[in-house]
Image (cartoon, rainbow, N blue to C red; front, top):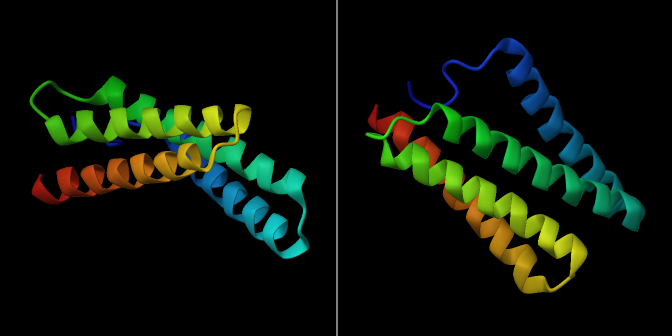
Length: 114
């Protein structure tokens, strides 16, 4: 098993709509200058990152270090996003984004090498 292969259609839909909700909230918050929408987008970012990371972790086999690394990076990225919401230090926000991008990159690498 690698990655999201065994996830149900409902899980795919929830992930997809979570990502769409993030971009809608972020776009609206940015264009309208609405701080609450930006905070909501950051919350959704953390939830989606932790959710996908947890799903990958639960499905990772011990022989797939890229999937395991991707799941850990996504979970850490989501946790850092929540830390940023509680203590708004810019370094936490940047570290969260970097961790999520590394997690996505590792997932793409694992799928590509499969």
